[in-house]
Image 1 (cartoon, helix red, strand yellow):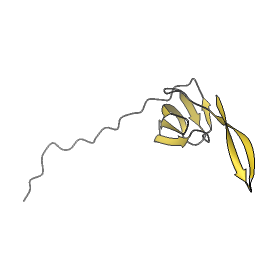
Image 2 (cartoon, helix red, strand yellow):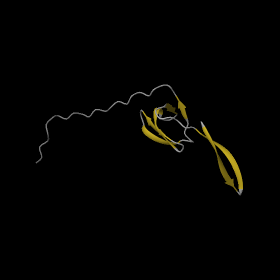
Image 3 (tube, one colour):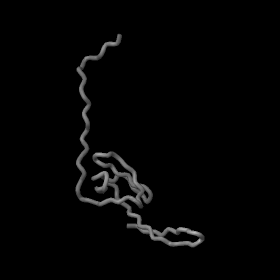
Image 4 (tube, one colour):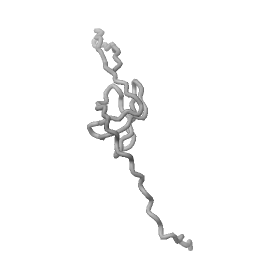
Length: 93
C-alpha cells in the first residue's frame, strides 16, 4: 500500500492529511459490493479498470474504490450465440 500526503488549504490554514492509495495488480481477482467478482485489467494511482462477469468493464477512482482481494476466480463469461436464421435469404421486391 502506497501512502502520500496531500496538503489541504482551508481559510488560509494548511492541513496535512494522509491519504492511503492502494495499488492493485493487473490480473488480481477482486470482489466489489455492487458488481460482484471481477478481474483487474488496468490500474494506476488515479484509475482502476475492472472487468466484472455480469456487468462488463467499469472504471473506478483508485483512492475511493472499496474492493476485497479474493483468491476466488470469477466465472468465465459465456458467449451469447446468435440465433440462426432459416437459411433462406429474403427476396427483395
